[in-house]
Length: 166
Image (cartoon, rainbow, N blue to C red; front, side):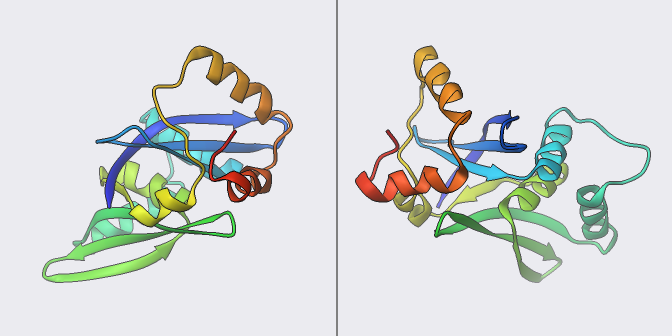
């Protein structure tokens, strides 16, 4: 299991989705995760430390965890199956620990609010397209152009062909 941070969050207007990229803290690998617009906005707001007069769903969940005397210990991206990422939230309440299944986008949005770390299981790195940092400016520009025509399912189809994201 490797600790991860958010490397980037891009909106892809052509698909009305966001591309959230996690970076391996102690390495060079990047994990791209396609997320929906609501989750993308929630992650973006948390990254900007933007607060709203009334709690949004991710704020509400984070508040509920705190009110019951628990804490979000960590989020783990656990698997990648047929192009879909899976994750678990580990919550601790005193001596008791709970593991809750969650979509990575929701789990990450909550982790950002709770100040909890994100980890990626090693098997996810083995199943995901290989992207390494640092990425050159030319690679970023080429990728941005490609995002205009690629669909999330295409991303993983290419991985299965050759083991790399070309």
